[in-house]
Length: 100
Image (cartoon, rainbow, N blue to C red; front, top):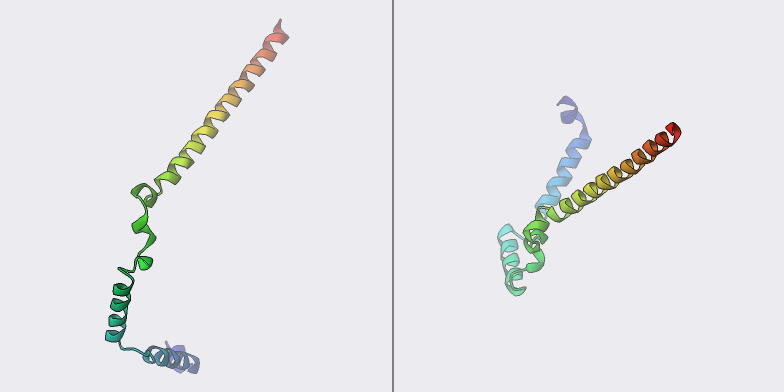
């Protein structure tokens, strides 16, 4: 706390931020009127609406991505099972040939 109070860099940074925040060309009421005019001129300002409003529910909750990842995981597990089965049959076949 003492360092912040004594160091002139902190004071200079605070004064610069204050000047920037006070140097707005329009008052908040004028900015509000400007945005309302913009919305009325553009017919609802669809370009300012979040993209989530245009997505379907399954895209919004990433269900399509989850389904894809589930299918890849299940496919990989199935393939590994088949390969392990082939290796097990091959090993068992090799043992039977040695016994005979």
